[in-house]
View 1 (cartoon, one colour):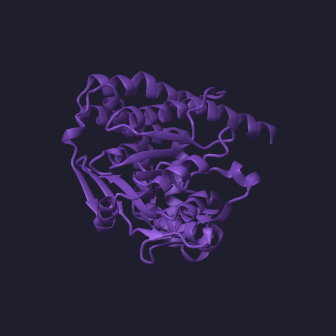
View 2 (view 1 turned 90 degrees about the horizontal axis):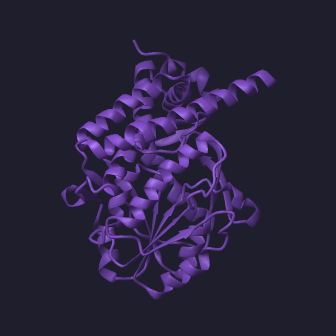
Length: 346
């Protein structure tokens, strides 16, 4: 066990070092010096290199194979695309920060837009519930032309200190995201942090929602398991995980403020078009868990259909059924009946 622990530590440190070097030495200069198409091509090459490494390549491949029942080549392709997504986002967001990207030229398409159009027309407050999809696709939701009024982003703060290379890599990417969302585009009116050091964000958000004309962005799939000690935690299967913990605060906030919730799934088309796929607005009921489940169910289907646009780990213990449009079972229960689907394709 001691040897295995040492090997894991070395592998984690090596992966963290590679990712930090990639971000700072390769992708950041590429974002500044190269045209967008070439910068993204560099990110493509880097994703291939990462796929060939024991970490993150092997875990990414196994996750793609087990969670989606893909053959060998298909799993490799999905693993590469999932490794590419945060790299491509890093290039695009740095281009925004460097003034190398003209957001006016972005093509943005809204699907199922009737509900969000009604919310815009009322001028009342509402909550946008989304997930950890590609950051570049998420950014246009902050355009005043897309979402008017006072906009509040709810998220974790940028870590002030890091102790490992993996944490340094995560801070590099997250800081670029927050700087792009907060300082560019049409600007965010406020950022409310949720963390062990920021445990009571609900009251100021509630007051602004009650005033009207306020839009709050919340990632309902955020892994805020530390909130368990405070209550308001719902445990359920999610994506490929048999068990995940979620905060029910967004449901409680919508209920108290008596404002509607609407889901949004953003993603990028291959030509760079940003698609914002809206759900139907609804009022939260008295059951916070039921409301939270309703939001998470939407995200589960979205990730199942477009896993390469989701940036958090998916898990390997449940499998997506494209035919049934749902996540099912576990690896152990599927291995006997579905063994053909996990064999390498010819």
